[in-house]
Length: 133
Image 1 (cartoon, helix red, strand yellow):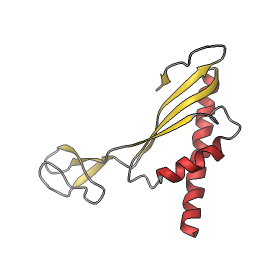
Image 2: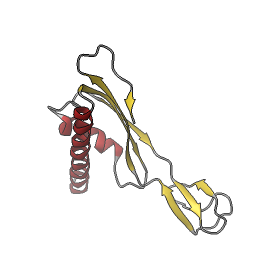
Image 3: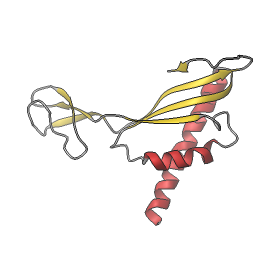
Protein backbone atom coordinates (compact mmCIF):
# COMPACT_ATOMS: atom_id res chain seq x y z
CA UNK A 1 0.00 0.00 0.00
CA UNK A 2 2.38 2.70 1.21
CA UNK A 3 5.38 1.48 -0.82
CA UNK A 4 3.22 1.41 -3.96
CA UNK A 5 1.92 4.92 -3.21
CA UNK A 6 5.50 6.20 -2.79
CA UNK A 7 6.54 4.57 -6.06
CA UNK A 8 3.56 6.18 -7.77
CA UNK A 9 4.59 9.62 -6.45
CA UNK A 10 8.15 8.94 -7.64
CA UNK A 11 6.99 8.03 -11.15
CA UNK A 12 4.54 10.95 -11.21
CA UNK A 13 7.30 13.45 -10.46
CA UNK A 14 9.44 11.83 -13.17
CA UNK A 15 6.53 12.13 -15.63
CA UNK A 16 6.00 15.77 -14.71
CA UNK A 17 9.66 16.51 -15.49
CA UNK A 18 9.35 14.51 -18.73
CA UNK A 19 6.25 16.44 -19.83
CA UNK A 20 8.03 19.71 -19.08
CA UNK A 21 10.90 18.60 -21.32
CA UNK A 22 8.46 17.47 -24.02
CA UNK A 23 6.66 20.82 -23.95
CA UNK A 24 9.98 22.63 -24.35
CA UNK A 25 10.87 20.45 -27.35
CA UNK A 26 7.42 21.00 -28.88
CA UNK A 27 7.68 24.80 -28.49
CA UNK A 28 11.19 24.87 -29.94
CA UNK A 29 10.04 22.80 -32.93
CA UNK A 30 6.79 24.79 -33.32
CA UNK A 31 4.70 21.64 -32.95
CA UNK A 32 0.92 21.52 -32.78
CA UNK A 33 1.06 18.35 -30.70
CA UNK A 34 3.22 15.43 -29.66
CA UNK A 35 2.30 12.16 -31.35
CA UNK A 36 4.71 9.59 -29.91
CA UNK A 37 7.28 9.48 -27.09
CA UNK A 38 9.85 6.70 -26.76
CA UNK A 39 11.55 6.22 -23.40
CA UNK A 40 14.33 3.75 -22.58
CA UNK A 41 14.36 2.52 -18.99
CA UNK A 42 17.22 0.54 -17.50
CA UNK A 43 16.37 -2.21 -15.00
CA UNK A 44 18.72 -0.57 -12.46
CA UNK A 45 17.09 2.89 -12.79
CA UNK A 46 14.76 2.46 -9.81
CA UNK A 47 11.78 3.27 -12.05
CA UNK A 48 8.82 0.92 -12.39
CA UNK A 49 7.76 1.03 -16.06
CA UNK A 50 4.11 0.17 -15.37
CA UNK A 51 3.82 2.84 -12.69
CA UNK A 52 5.40 5.33 -15.12
CA UNK A 53 2.84 4.28 -17.75
CA UNK A 54 -0.01 4.90 -15.26
CA UNK A 55 1.40 8.26 -14.12
CA UNK A 56 1.91 9.61 -17.65
CA UNK A 57 -1.76 10.50 -18.43
CA UNK A 58 -2.02 12.40 -15.14
CA UNK A 59 1.20 14.36 -15.72
CA UNK A 60 0.46 15.09 -19.39
CA UNK A 61 -3.19 16.14 -19.02
CA UNK A 62 -3.79 19.46 -20.77
CA UNK A 63 -0.37 19.51 -22.44
CA UNK A 64 0.72 19.00 -26.05
CA UNK A 65 1.72 15.47 -24.97
CA UNK A 66 -1.69 14.51 -23.57
CA UNK A 67 -2.70 12.28 -26.49
CA UNK A 68 0.81 11.03 -27.28
CA UNK A 69 1.54 7.34 -27.52
CA UNK A 70 4.02 6.42 -24.79
CA UNK A 71 6.43 3.64 -25.75
CA UNK A 72 8.62 2.20 -23.00
CA UNK A 73 11.67 0.20 -24.05
CA UNK A 74 13.98 -1.83 -21.83
CA UNK A 75 17.58 -0.62 -21.88
CA UNK A 76 20.19 -3.38 -21.53
CA UNK A 77 22.61 -3.74 -18.65
CA UNK A 78 26.15 -3.39 -20.00
CA UNK A 79 29.42 -3.49 -18.07
CA UNK A 80 33.10 -3.03 -18.80
CA UNK A 81 35.55 -5.37 -17.11
CA UNK A 82 38.32 -3.82 -15.03
CA UNK A 83 40.44 -6.97 -15.54
CA UNK A 84 40.23 -7.83 -19.24
CA UNK A 85 38.74 -4.58 -20.61
CA UNK A 86 35.85 -6.31 -22.39
CA UNK A 87 32.42 -4.71 -22.69
CA UNK A 88 29.54 -7.15 -22.30
CA UNK A 89 25.90 -7.57 -21.37
CA UNK A 90 25.17 -8.46 -17.76
CA UNK A 91 22.08 -9.59 -15.90
CA UNK A 92 20.22 -7.88 -13.10
CA UNK A 93 21.47 -10.32 -10.49
CA UNK A 94 25.03 -10.68 -11.76
CA UNK A 95 27.16 -7.80 -12.98
CA UNK A 96 30.11 -10.06 -13.89
CA UNK A 97 32.13 -9.94 -17.10
CA UNK A 98 30.64 -12.25 -19.72
CA UNK A 99 34.11 -12.79 -21.23
CA UNK A 100 36.36 -13.67 -18.27
CA UNK A 101 33.83 -14.03 -15.42
CA UNK A 102 35.50 -11.41 -13.19
CA UNK A 103 33.25 -9.40 -10.89
CA UNK A 104 35.41 -6.25 -11.06
CA UNK A 105 33.19 -4.45 -13.53
CA UNK A 106 32.00 -0.90 -14.10
CA UNK A 107 28.41 -0.22 -15.15
CA UNK A 108 28.09 1.33 -18.62
CA UNK A 109 24.31 1.25 -19.00
CA UNK A 110 21.23 -0.13 -17.34
CA UNK A 111 20.58 2.58 -14.76
CA UNK A 112 19.29 5.24 -17.14
CA UNK A 113 15.98 6.83 -18.03
CA UNK A 114 16.46 8.17 -21.54
CA UNK A 115 14.13 10.16 -23.75
CA UNK A 116 14.96 8.28 -26.94
CA UNK A 117 12.72 10.03 -29.47
CA UNK A 118 9.75 12.35 -29.85
CA UNK A 119 7.45 12.42 -32.85
CA UNK A 120 5.76 15.77 -33.45
CA UNK A 121 3.02 17.19 -35.61
CA UNK A 122 4.11 20.61 -36.77
CA UNK A 123 1.73 23.56 -36.88
CA UNK A 124 -0.05 23.71 -40.24
CA UNK A 125 1.41 20.39 -41.39
CA UNK A 126 -0.75 17.55 -42.61
CA UNK A 127 1.38 14.44 -42.00
CA UNK A 128 3.36 14.06 -38.78
CA UNK A 129 7.02 14.93 -38.90
CA UNK A 130 9.64 12.29 -38.19
CA UNK A 131 11.12 11.58 -34.77
CA UNK A 132 13.31 14.16 -33.09
CA UNK A 133 16.42 12.61 -31.56
